[in-house]
Structures are given as C-alpha cells and as structure tokens.
Length: 114
Length: 116
Image 1 (cartoon, helix red, strand yellow):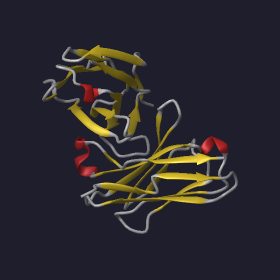
Image 2 (cartoon, rainbow over the protein chains, first blue to last red; image 1 turned 135 degrees about the vertical axis):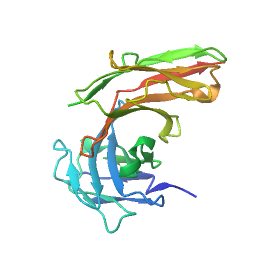
Image 3 (cartoon, rainbow over the protein chains, first blue to last red; image 1 turned 90 degrees about the vertical axis):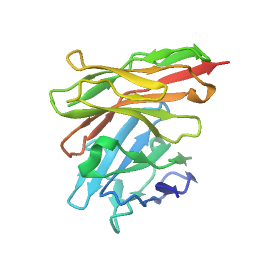
Image 4 (cartoon, rainbow over the protein chains, first blue to last red; image 1 turned 135 degrees about the horizontal axis):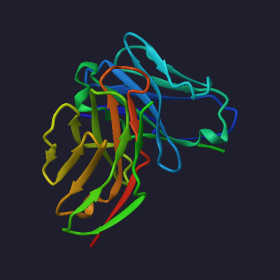
C-alpha cells in the first residue's frame, strides 16, 4: 500500500493558469508538508501543517496555498502560474510525536510551466 | 536559522568499495535529529538513516553508517560495499525537535555514482 501518494505525477500547463496537486497519506500521521525541488535538486520546505496550525515559509509567494480537507490530505493550489514555478513538488508526512522517524515522502509531481 | 552544508556536489565510487559523504550543519539547538535521504533516478525520497543528537553512539543500518561529531557539527555517511543501486542523490537533513515551519532543513545534496 502506498504510504504517501500524489496526483498527478506530471503536470504541464501554461503561464497564468491555476492548478492543484493532491496529496494523501494513509499512515495516520498528523503533520503534512509541501516541498519544492528546483532544477539544481535543492529541496525547500514550503508549508507544514497539522491539525493545530498552518506554518508558511515566508519566502513562498501567496499564489501558493495549501488546503487540507481532512487529516489525511494536504492539497497544493497554485494560482497564476509562472515559468519559475516549474519544479518537482513533494508532499511528505510525519507523526509529530514521533518525528525521530523522519518524514515519509510522496513520489513527487513534476510541474512544467510553458 | 539552521543551515546544512554538503561540500561534495558529486562523487563516484567503484562497486564494492567504501565511500563517505560529508555533511556539516549549523545550529544553536541542543535537541535535534539528523537524517540522510536518498533520491534515486526514480525521484522518490527514501530515508536511509537517522541519528538523535542526544545519542553518542553512531547509527548503523546494514551497509550504511554515520560518523556523528556533535561538537564539530558534522554528520557524515559511510556506504560500505557500494552497489550499483546506491547510485542516487543523497541529502543530509536537520530537524529541530520542536515543531515549526522550518522543521526540516535539507542540504544541497551530493550526487553519488557507483561505477561497475
């Protein structure tokens, strides 16, 4: 069974469009994250969210917004896409109280903005 | 703020040999965790090994072991008996024990190639 899943795996879209990436985890974790990996492979945290609060990396443009319909899902909405948004986006989850085990990552979504 | 540095952008090793990947970090925290993640060409991020800062004993997972030097803020990964399947990007990561938006900080990665 997949622990953390993301859809779609690939997303190609034009500048100015609005798109969403879905993330689901079946591990019963209470904390979920979104990361952006750029072309140089650098991983940068964008958001972390648990049932208490959403914490946003202040460098993330407000065109990006996470939406959590329930504990098992954290979707990423992106408005007015720009060329620089092209990257691989990873969703991850962890159990806050057991963060010693690290985070479990989804397979990633490659977003290409043309 | 925490920072993680991996000074070796690329490395290569012959199959069956041993290789060490370096990682240094900067923090004022006393309680934290360190991790090595592997990202093969499939792009999946896979946890390789973890280390609790309060433990002096170095973590070991099969062919993977770490050399954790807390005073020097160094956390290197040793891969013994390298296999072709070890070819991947390796990321060192730091995590504070307290929860906040900067919980995880990743290094820039080291691309490891295992040569036949």
